[in-house]
Length: 629
Image (cartoon, rainbow, N blue to C red; front, top):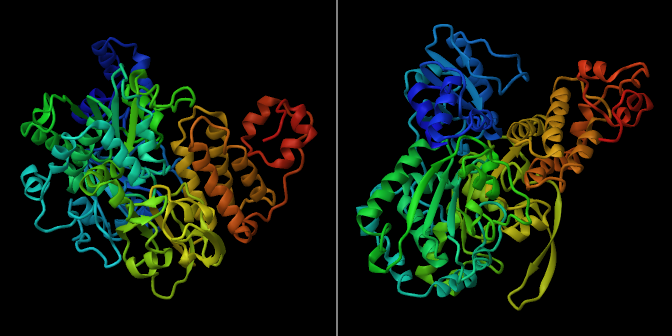
């Protein structure tokens, strides 16, 4: 993958001749190279225009007008694209003079400054959809990022983000007490560090919320094989943009957390798998690594401790599935990002190169530095029991002040987050729904009531009924409310939003991002996308809502990795929470049974979308397609 990136950066695309040349250079078969080029969306097989523009089409950007931006850009450049709803992810469209090209891409991890796009490798935020001339002249709008924290925030990881006197170089970091926790960690035993992390109660901030200390304890203290640490910086969950700012503005904090973790785990090699859409972030991290090496914070015999450790940057190439830890490991090994079956391939047992491996998120690894500074017990006093510490939540969508906020876990309610911290809804609008943990989280309806159990200081538990505004922003409360905290991406939907359109946008994302390894996910995600496409075009039949739910039910729990749940949960929850909107888009009668004389070949030519009656119809079985959806 690094060689593919280098080739594309030099020549603009990866031709058939390039595949042959790279295969020969690496001593591989051409198919080994071609399978990567065709799997990872960022690799191109045809030349783009001299100026290539990638426009984010995922939910927050679509809500802010990214489809209008694409239309206006194409009209200005004279580019013809497929009709709306057809071939959204078709190959790049190039202007007739070859000067410009455009394509839709998935989430660019800047949802709060939507709509966004990349011109070349430069990110452009808050793009004016009605003034594309500025974009074409490479002029960005004057964006003022957040600086001072909100009074309800408790900044720990983000204490340096947005500071006017802060820079990314190591001298600035050292003046602020940087790498003191690494020095402290090297003076205590590895088991003490692991115990501190266990006592802190830190849960992973990447989405699953699994205990970090417990995960670390899976590595045997007397392990004879090499141990690897991987920092998952493949931030690609729609609605999430927290890791971007750590990488771009405080890289040495991340690096210090990685180095402490390596020492605790006796891992001599660490990889930072950074998403391909963060080219500047990768360069910043490379500079930070070289600065740390010059100060003997990494490399041979760091700070005279006798411990050797190397850290490497590895760029992904646009595949969301590589955020799943075993898919990431496969990608890091130079293969397609197909997740592995667990068991037996638990990373802590059989991970990178079949050796013990720990995979942690960017934010999670940053917390390690602060746990060493504060002590595990003191850190655990932040937040709530089983929901300790701080976490960064990202708010986008229909609020007046979208942005990032670092809060004590559970100390802020959903209502405080939306109405006080994010400035409330747009003028004249009411809250309709919230997706609280990135697009894969189940949607919560604004007028629902939730029964949540809450632990009291004396250890007892009481059950309370509460509104959506009263739900504490912590792992357990959001799970009890029927959704999840996920990656912390809160997408707010007001009463102007069409829920069928919202779900269709999400379905398009998951249909595009399925790795294709598991049949239920590969086929089902595409079926769900096609059915919501049909409903939006006015062709929905009365069985469509039930069919959508059935497809979702038959994906969740039937795939190798959690992507099955990620693509099924939105459909299941939107159908459940907003049945009236889906029913109103599904008014046509179910098509009559297929004639018995149909052959399988004719069925293929028809390209019909299956519905439940068809799946059980005798004519369908006679045609050779037996079984149920």
